[in-house]
Length: 281
Ligand code: NA7
Image (cartoon, rainbow, N blue to C red):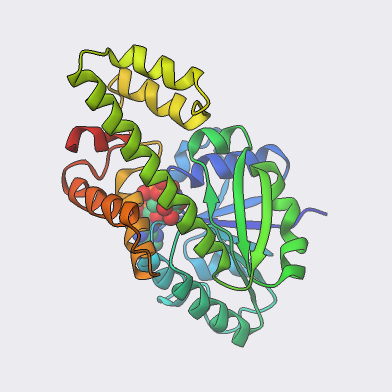
């Protein structure tokens, strides 16, 4: 029988992830800090809990997909939180991009109460959720990973166990640092070529047909051409990820550069897509 899933976080990622899980037959109950977002589901009968505590009590596995470390602390240890007294025997999958530090703290609190915790952040955004092609990188106990692997499968083309608690978060920060570097790189060369009389459309076509062509360049190249900066992956999130990477010791030349670029871009373009960085360059 399929595990009963509780899902916390009805954001840009959470909503399509829940839709995928419902499609393959998982019973899902949801909770979101701001009520009312569940109306975005076609299935209006989706069940809603009024607190993380209520949600975890009626489900087997809880997935958390929220913004940042502070959100995790509020959801786990706030009033009516996941770790309220009497909650045990549950598995919590934290799929948010957060620090390895907060994962270690929450995993320990879970362990003390007899619950299991995996950090399981993802690479990919809304399009990859909709096509079930996310990459999930998982930290924590390997046998727990295998217990829940079938939940990751409809969401991902690869779910990989990479080490103990926090290892998933560390892998994710490395991957997203590359995402920041690639985004800034693409934006810079489009601008550079334009200054030298090369149309962006032509440049992007050249890149796409060269050995450097890839899905990311294609999607973000099209966004630049259409001047469509509606967030698939919000710029504020990469700014956060680069802050976390820096706290984890990132101090390489490119790492320092993208860190600075995205911190500066965040105030004006934080709610827009990562590639809106081109507007700030
Ligand atoms: P969104 O679309 O910005 O959604 C963020 C979600 O996190 C949303 O449900 C928020 O609830 C929730 N949130 C934020 N802060 C809190 C606190 N303090 N307590 C409870 N809930 C909170 O993000 P995405 O879906 O794009 O991204 C999710 C993760 O994937 C993130 O780690 C990215 O880096 C990658 P709200 O509706 O505002 O009440």
